[in-house]
Amino acid sequence: MPNLSHLLSGLLIASLTFAGPIVIPEQGDVLSTRQSSTDAFDNTVPELNARGPKKPFYAIAHRCNDMGAVQRAVDDGANAIEMDLFSEGKDGWWASHDGPSKNGNRAKAMFDAIAGHRKAGKPITFVWLDLKNPDACDPAKPAEWGCSIAALRDMARQVLEPQGVRVLYGFYENENGNAYRLLRSGLTGNEALNVDGRSAPLQQFFNDNGPSSLQKRIASYGWMRLGEGFGDCTEPGDAHLTCTQLRQEVASGKFGKVFSWTAVVDQVQLVQKLMGAGIDGIIYGLDGFPYGGSATQTLAQIRSSLAQHGGYKYAGIEDNPW
Image 1 (tube, one colour):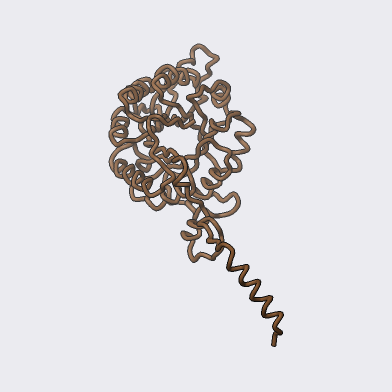
Image 2 (cartoon, rainbow, N blue to C red):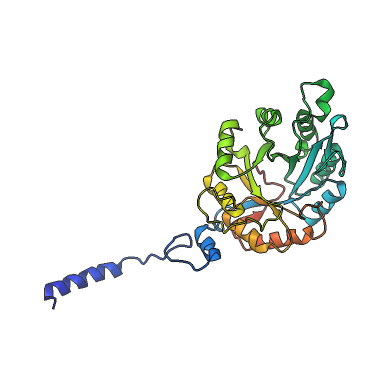
């Protein structure tokens, strides 16, 4: 049996222990084993601080390649616009996904329409120009100036930027040409560069190729069918999984903004997981089709999800993404 001194010593230690504060683990602390991948996700990704400044969230209307699509997106309340830009030689730049079919409107007419909506008070914060063939024309050749990336850049500066519409130049597997270098060399405060890719390779690309400003390095990752290869957001290493790559891009702190693509109707759970990972916005709309139809409902679902994340706000006309 223990002697009296041992008993008194034990009582003293116990009293000191219970006199101290009891520490309750926060949500992000890993102190228990979860049962499912969804629970593991909830325990791994910290929630945005609801008491601090709210993070602007951008709902980017997908494939707005004609006037009607832009009007529908504006009517729905989209706060950013994505359009495809195709250089069609002597015919200049068109809002077209597949060109030269001219399945949209001329870039100049599209820019005029968007600038007009912004001037009327619509909260179009930026336009994401998905460049399909940015190096098709050489700006050094006078005969090709009108279809060159330099001409498109100047058009955006003359029409969009004076009205407060920022411009994001998007590259998808075509970022190693002269167009990227030309844009990078003279970015204004209203412009940024996007490259789509995985976190680690993308960090290396921006370190090697610029721009020098982190705020103008915009990352994106996704798929036209968002649920395919989504992951549980927690996989280690360079897993080719959408939520995991986006979580890594956010956590790295090496990008000015991190966007995903493309959300369609009734993907609420996926969108909420991406919000939990801390993305800055998402392209939404239809799977491979121009903006319209159920895109209206998709945006409503995104905004409803935002209301459940106290650290977010829906970006407004006063928010500057970069």
